[in-house]
Image 1 (spheres, one colour):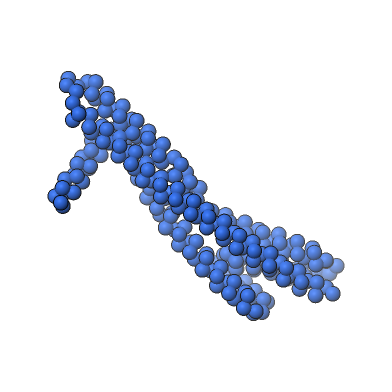
Image 2: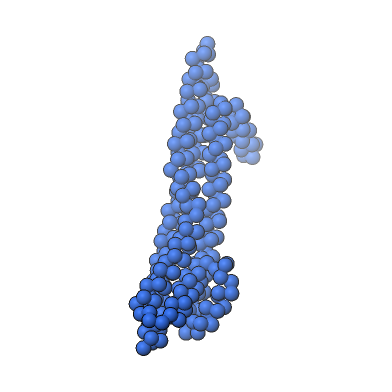
Length: 232
């Protein structure tokens, strides 16, 4: 069985090495796209996993009834490295503290400023979470067509060789057909994981954004009540 697998591997290598230049270029392009997309898939998986855990830790701390001022001071010490709900919270509370000190400002105006600051922070987080998703979408949508191009070219190359052959046999066209089918398989191999990952991570982005938005509304309500109490 091992000998058979070894022979099949050698046969595959022989087909690829004798494929036409265009088909080899297509295969190399698809292989590169697949490697890069898999790298992005694992990186985004780790990033979303960390983001979900960070959101759980923050919500647990936030709703534990601790002092918000103390929480803000601790988080703002590392403001440049903050992300997720930490960044949204710090941006909103900082704007609240700045506006609350102003005289002749209404609580509604404070609330609007806080919401704008948190919305800007959320936009930055959304931009970070969606990084490289467009690449996965591109790989998923274009790889089958790139593989199909290699397939068509391989079949054309095979029939051109057949037209110049004195005797038409299956052996004379089999290598060209084989390289064409390999190009199709590589296109699907690059596209399918990218499409699955794109759909999965797009859903993860939506869930995280919804989670952030719910927190923003609740936090804005808390600050709005504090603004009314301080201005009363």
